[in-house]
Length: 156
Image (cartoon, rainbow, N blue to C red; front, side, top):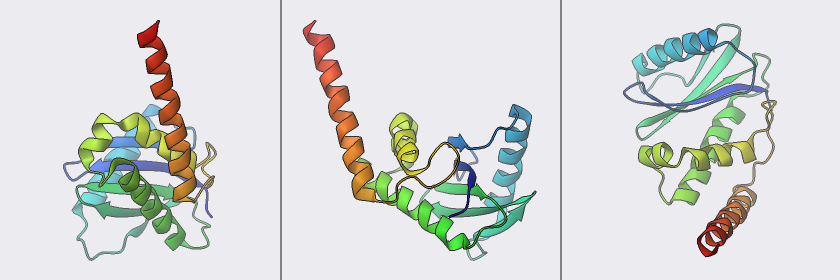
C-alpha cells in the first residue's frame, strides 16, 4: 500500500468536514492544497476518473452522498485501486458505527470519525488495520471506557 499524505472530507458546498495530514506542511501549503483540490474536484463531472495527478503526488477521491473523500498518495503507488478500497472501507466502517452515516454524523461526532481513521491509518500514513470488525470492536471498547468514566464522574 502506498503512503498516504493526507485525507480530506469535503462537502458538495466545498466545506471541510474532516482533515488529517500525515506529512508536515505549513498552514499556507495546507490551505493551498485544500483550495485547489476543492475547486478541481467539485468541478469534475461524475463520470470522470477518480484519480488525478496533483503537484508531485496522486490524488484519489470518491463521492459518497454529500461528501467527497479525498486522499493524497505517493506517486510511486502500485495500485490506486487499493486507495479507493481504503476510502470505501473507511466509509463502510463509519456506516456501521453510526448506522447509515451522513454528513451531520461527521460534523457532530468528528472525534469518533477521527478515532476510526486513527485505527485504520498510522501516523506515518501507512495502513494499520483493514478489518472493519476489529476497528468496530476497538471503538466499542473505547465507548464503554467513556461510559464508565462518565458514570464515575456522576457518582463522585
